[in-house]
Amino acid sequence: MNKMLRQFMAVAEAGTMSGGATAALVSQPSLTVNMRRLEETMGVPLFIRTPRGVRLTEYGETLYQNARLMQRLYDNTLKALERQRQRTEEGLRIGSGYSWWSLFIRDMVVDHSKRHPGARIYVSLGNQLRCMDLLLGGDISMFVAHEIEGLSHNTGTELIPLMQVGAGYFVRAGHPLLGRPCTMADIDRFPMVSTAVPEARHQRFFETWTQTLADSAFDQQHYTFASNSLAACLDYVEHTDAVINHTDVMAREFERRGLHRLSLTDPARKRTVGIYVLRERMGEQRTMETIALLKQAAATVLPL
Image: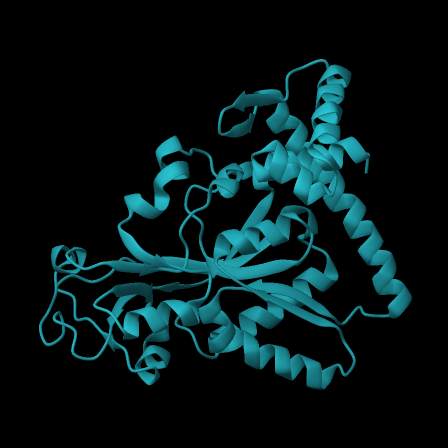
């Protein structure tokens, strides 16, 4: 791909010229000059420059989406050639939320490696927005996660539903809320812990995004602790009065860690869990085979 387009993508994703220069391994003055040249070549403004960094114009968003598509096609072509050369057609490159890894994907991966010795397997764990980043970047072929509400159609992804799961609220032993049914108002009196606070760099994934959400997501949702590590979040809950909201199918695992599920006066809302995959890959034999493996593994442990 054209060097300036790569640098443009780095700036778009970093939100600042300095961050883009660091990601693109180029000096900031050189990057700034190249971005001016790119705008002159395109004949339209690509950035809105602010004291806090840069945002893409409408033209910039169009260029970014198409540049990402070109990057994916180019990267996927190189990877396909590499797979053919090294005969890794039975490999797996998937993403997963923390819960789904421990519940069924881990066992599926181990079983797959036994049936296909030598197959390359790569699994990336993280929340659904991080996994979406990896999927769009071509680093993984699909991932399992909760449905991303408000996801833009322009991401070019498809959600294949697996099941409906509820939410649970979990606390340490001896927590003041234990021993009686709780309302959401009761829970709201205590600080929350989260593994999935939105980040400004994920703005492009959504149909709508407010500046308040982009700037103050951490403060707005009154989380006292957030981390991309579930283990770190559970450690925090174990030693404070904080409450973690997580899928209820992890109740047994959390109890093993010494946490207790709160009893609610009203049932929690059900959410869809599924497999995200690029629409352009739907119908490909290897993609459909991997989806079938995930569906089969999920059906053994999760409610339909």
